[in-house]
Image (cartoon, rainbow, N blue to C red; front, side, top):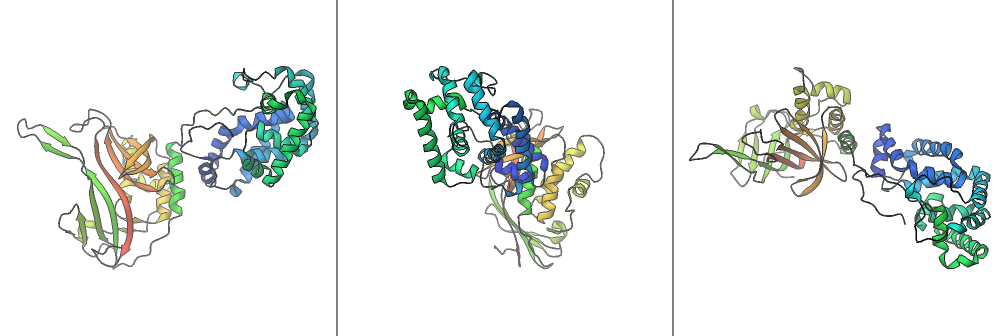
Length: 437
């Protein structure tokens, strides 16, 4: 198996899903795996052919990305399979490559100290003999052996990459090992280490910073599109259930100075008329129900917003005044629009895609909201207040919003203080105010 690493927040499956609507997202798959694929191809076909074969591997992957199993977080076995298929047309080059290695003992794919043979493996003087033995294997045996020893794939991953039964993987690997042991009997006891000394591949995986703000928002848009539309009659109500908290600013009795009290979480349920013609209801924190006049609440079923990102961006930036304040207002409008009302999935998706174009956004990782782990896309205003849109870190479903003071200049809020948040739990359509779905 390949050495384990910390899994990035955005898996290859996520990137493949995103690339169906944003083809540029596939570039992250290339950045993540191109070095590994190129070294694999270099050792099997030579450096010069490997350049073209690597490009062809990723071109094939890009054009067939719709067939990728999105439940698989790592695309490397799939990419190795594409590369192995392309290599079948270069078997003569591969055999020449191993024969050249047998003559010289120089691996053209070694590019730096990260590819050096571990000190404990004393196989350097045997490289020539082993390379000659590899050149005499059948193409199928060589494919399986290099994917296990060089690419460090498991047997099931090799079977997936080559589209062959796992029993065939085992039999080809057994045959390859048997033939190499026969050719090099002195090293039978350390065969795995000796083979690794020639064909080892340790992919250089740069630490992945995870998804950027625009990527998170586009993934959230793709998730929103999968939500069903809610039908509603004008005489019905939109029901929104949330967990909310809001910091309180009071006045010190002695000094008269403003004092900040941290938010206290409360359960909140609200019923708002679909068309704004009927009175609604608010139920929060164990207090008596509060009537909500329809004239104050307005309509809560929003089906008239743009459904295309460009038109939605124009809507977010309506009535511009110039300067960075327009960007702040556009970003805040996203949260304001999604709070306690129903917006069609097509409009929600367009809103997230439009928000992906707002400058100055950033990602805040591991954002917790009502006990749920999420990832936040944030924008900080000139006043030092940061507004977070929080999404599920696995599905990118919208979870809610939060406001945080980022500087000590946001009096009376201390630096890092959470001013308030809303965790959206459910939105539904019901017949009467007070009815719970």
